[in-house]
Image (cartoon, rainbow, N blue to C red):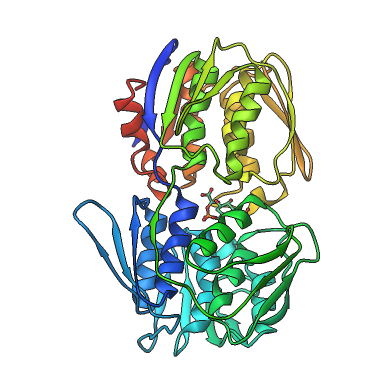
Length: 423
Ligand SMILES: O=C(O)C1=C[C@@H](OP(=O)(O)O)[C@@H](O)[C@H](O)C1
Ligand SMILES: C=C(OP(=O)(O)O)C(=O)O
C-alpha cells in the first residue's frame, strides 16, 4: 500500500507530541535494574519500546501495563535470571540492541541478541571490544562486528575505553549497566562521541533512578556500584517526532503548535527549532509547548549536525523549499542507521526538486534543479517516511510506500496529522 497526501497551505494546527523514545528505553532499563517497584507514566508505545519491554521481561523483570497506559516495573536489583537458550529479538531497534548488550552480562546464563536483517548490518564491535576487556565473553554468531551475538561472562567494571565516534549508544550501554557492576566503572573515549546529547539523556535518567554519573564533558565518565533505586518517572515529549510538524509549518506556511514538550529538555533534536528560526520561521516557546509560524519563505543554511542525527532527514525535507543551498556537515554515521540515511536524504531532497552533492561527512542540498515528486519506498525507515510526508504535503505529488513503518517510533503519526486537520 502507498499513501498519497494532498498539498496543504495556511495550516493552523495544534498537536500533542508523543512521549520520547530515548527516555522510555532508558527509564525501562533503569527500572528493570532497580531494587523495588517503579512506575513509568506516559511511556512511548511503539515497536522499538515494545522490543525493550519484551527483552526485559525475558531477563526476569515483571512489567505490567495499567489501565491508563502507565508501566509498573518490578525491578530485579540487577540480577537477571534467564531460561536456557534465551534469545532476544531486537528487531530493528538499535537502541535496544546496544543498551541490552551490556545489560545481558548481568544475566545468570548466556543470552543471544539478534535482530532484523538491517540490524545485522549495524555495528557493535567498539562496544563488544570494551565489554570483553571488562569481564564479558561476547561472541559473534554470524559476521564479525555485527549482531547476532551471544553474550556470556559478567560486567566487572573498572577502567574501560569505548570508541563511541560511530554511536553514542555504545557509551550509554556501558554507563547504564555500570551501577550493577562489581566495582567502580571509569570510561574514557579516545575520540569525540557521536550524538552527544543522548549521553546527557542517559545521565539524566540514571540520576533520576538514584545513580549520579561523574563526568568531565563527554570524554570521561565514572559510575560507582550500588544499583538503581526505584522511582516514579514521567516520560517527556519527543522533539524528534515533533520535528515533522514544525517542518510542515515551515514549508507549507501557517502555524503549528506542538504541546507536551519540555522547554528545558536535554534532547539534542531541539536544535531543529533553532535551525528553522535561522531559515526564517518564527519560533515561540510557551509553557510546555512550541509554536512555529512561517510564510513559507525560507533561507538556506550551513549547519553541523553530528549531535542531532535523527533530524537530518527532517532538514533534508525542508531544504528543497529554501531560496538557496543548505549544507549539512557531521553526517558520517547516517549510513548505519535503520537504512542508509545518506541515500534516503538524497531521495527525499530529489522528491522536493533538489539535487545533492554528497561527500564523506557533508551534503549540500541545492533547490530547484529537478522536477521532484514521485513515489518513495522508505525501506522500513520510519524517519524517511515521516520526512517524505513533509515534502508530500508541500507538493501534493509524492506517494509514500509502506507508511506503517512509522510504527517503529511513532505509531500515531498519521492519526496526529488527521486529528490536527493537516491530512
Ligand atoms: O541513545 C539513543 O536513544 C539514540 C542515539 C542516537 O544514535 P547514535 O548514537 O548511534 O547516533 C540516535 O540516532 C537514536 O535514534 C537514539
Ligand atoms: C536511529 C534511530 O533509532 P535506533 O538507533 O534505536 O534504531 C532512530 O530512531 O532514528
